[in-house]
Length: 425
Image 1: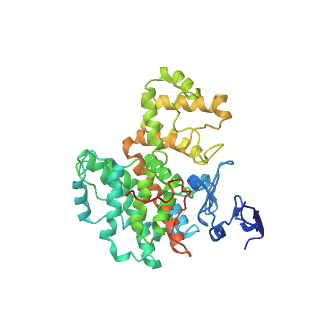
Image 2 (image 1 turned 90 degrees about the horizontal axis):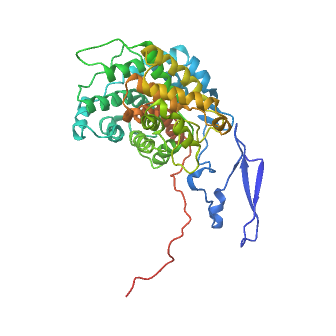
Image 3 (image 1 turned 60 degrees about the horizontal axis):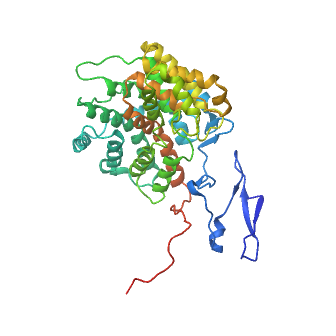
């Protein structure tokens, strides 16, 4: 119940309108404007940046303070003490698992990593040079054609089975996309490997050579997945919810989220970091590009610095920097020319008053892009990795919505076109 009210006075309406004001656990109060439609009024909020379209208990962000909580747990603590699959369980169920619950969950995911053999034929319909996200949109949506035995969205058990299948099969599909692009055979998953080890195995091993997976690289992949697991009501999550509000099956909803994530303004940030480093080209050019970044008249921007949500610092970046240092040391890549450019940019951004004053610190995309390049993952696959990590967050939000008294999404508009006119005689 609301214990506060907002009074709205509108010209042309005699009575002032009383609007309930709700107070969340954390964050700003929310004005309930649902009654406005009965008065012939809508709110106008392009981008929905001032609109709470839903109530949620999953993730909380305070961009000004640099806070990211999953079910109340700070992301820094989860990255240090938890792992990706435990965080998946937390997002889905609301609480950390007991040791027995975690063992069961991990076992379930491991035993769902294979995809239907016929699905491999889908890849033949794509060109070898197709963008990986184009293929991911297609094959994830196609999962509903193979696993239609559990698509009743109002059945709790069906939703759980679909959640497990999606989390388990996304890294398998991501690796298949990569293998297809380079003409190598698909590698089957192995149940004796961890989630991240399995992904690296399917990405880089072949039937001719089955190399051991570095624990440091596996840990780095696990952290990349974990740090991208959810980020509240962003564009792709809102897309999943909007698609889900129609009653669409979970595979279609996640495919819709992947399509939204594909946009360069959303999921392409770490890919943009590598393109920027390539544009700079050499350490000797850094000062010139820093000057361009400070020039308001120059369209060049330093990618991977600052964040639209985090106005101070990205809480995920500190963890990712530590992981980045570990990976570069493991691979002996400290002298890689592109990575040397990245490290010098990092130093400048953390010491230069211009960047400090504006909160333009290296963010999670900056470090994750460097890590993925060092591991050997091609730039065009970065957003696929992002989608793989984000899957449990998308599913958690979809499931939360389906479990509530939801309505189909139907945004309104401010119409500025022609008034009614007759077709010419």
